[in-house]
Image (cartoon, rainbow, N blue to C red; front, side):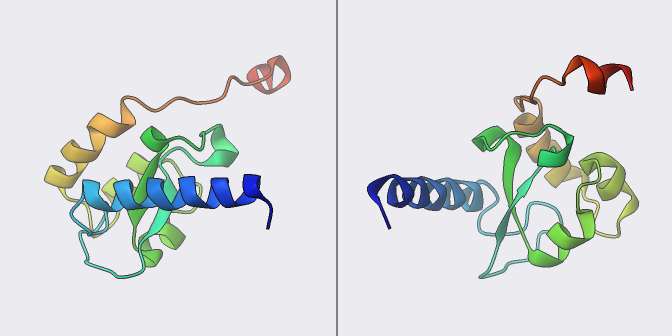
Amino acid sequence: MDAEQLGRRSAKHRLKGKAKQQFGGKCAYCGARSQSLTLDHIVARSQGGLDVRSNLVAVCQRCNLSKGSRPLWDWWQASACWDEQRALQLAATVLQCQIKARSKQETYD
């Protein structure tokens, strides 16, 4: 493993730690405490979401798999784990989220 890969792994580890702290070690979506929280892209990468702190949140594997690449609010409000308090806490993060500019081809399709 070269220094660049090690640096990226270290940065991802720090980012994941900060995301876990944001909701006190609980899943941001359902509130379950889990030892194996994963990072979820609030705006999916396939939808233009970036690998930046404001677009990443720590969630349990069940919620991450259930949400997939669907828009967060559509999925979450329809799920049994919807919680207005967690939504308000997460909304501050989402409001800062950047997305990649779409190409002209994608814009007009």
